[in-house]
Image (spheres, one colour):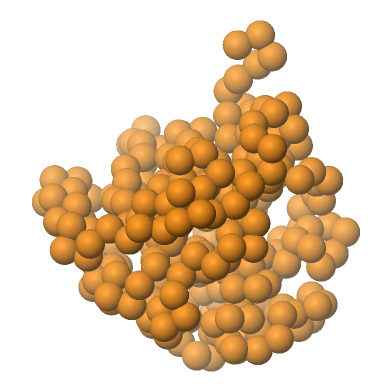
Length: 266
């Protein structure tokens, strides 16, 4: 079987639960060879974000050019984009990449803001260049400059509005709206509701990163986006169910990315 090569373009999380660290773990756990281009360094832990240091745009370009001169990714996930200039630079590369997924990370699990206010418009522009965007309820509201959806119908309507504004495919992560942790996929084929299992845990650090990278790892090996998303949701559920067993940090801990590979004795 051909090796799936998956690229993450995102920020670094020294606690290992989110950002490129989560993406690379998710890629590996999903059977893909992971690669990374770092867009920002953060000072964060399970308890919050204390600082963000964007990588100079010229060096992000150098990372991209050096990598793409040698390796063609089968799928690419984009995460934290902290500045207007960086969003524009990344946007130049997406049209030539396959299976591109943009998780428009703007607010951390802790509630800390991760992007400048003036970068929101650039994030909107970047959304239109990706094959799939995966905003949560708060991020969808920021993208549309509207109130946060409080029902599944409202979330669906917001997804349709994002599609109308030029997005190709939108996955609204509405897990907190229903007992079945339902996400909504809106694309040119219509609306698909993807149900899951609600997991009661405070260890949710990096769930968005983990889901989007799991989708990226699976998309080259599945027939449809719905299949890739459904499989990724199942994986994330297992990682959440095992999250408490990790006992990492004193805040919102990470999910268990290697739940399918580790055992209690290892």
